[in-house]
Image (cartoon, rainbow, N blue to C red; front, side):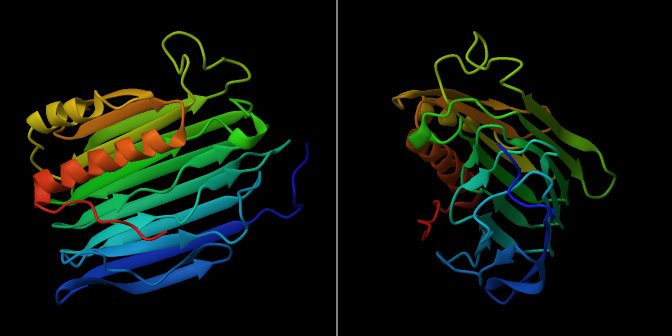
Length: 281
């Protein structure tokens, strides 16, 4: 096992979006290789911009640093994803790092749903996500962590997966959510009681308002929608500052992905009256 390159990559992507007429448009874009972004797509009649972030390198190597800044001006709506899974390669030395900074000005909506993260044997990864929410803004966050490369029967063979999420208000910095997940399966097995047990995939979905609160009954509806799903276990709950969270465990990627899509679909319909769009991948 060895690192694949001698010089770490420092990828940067900075995006600015604003509402122009009936659509949200990308007005500011700075990219440093290997991060890239495709031109926005418009998949429904809401004017929401659908953006795909690309990494043509195929994976993330130990020592690499990726920085993503996204700013939404008032009234903008965007859905950000990736066209394929993020692969974390093995490393003997420094972990790979990713820093994501999301600024939502008043009246904006941002959904950030990358495809699954696949940590290879010996991979080490640290991620910091900071969200700043303006008044009447909404952020939706989704993430799926795989156990490893299924085709090679890799299961929890990575060194470390460390992810920190902080959501605060834009005006005064009040913390609305702080979530820390640090997994070191070689030191602390994940298959024990109270952790992953017999499941392999972890899916997480958050819906957080910049002000006010989401109707708590939505969490009950999400729980009812997830309860009959086969091959996974999960539920939804309300958060202290008016948001809601969904966590699911599954034995395969597809049911977990479908569960998070269901959560986004029901939440979007409840809050904005629009179903989730069918993405083009």
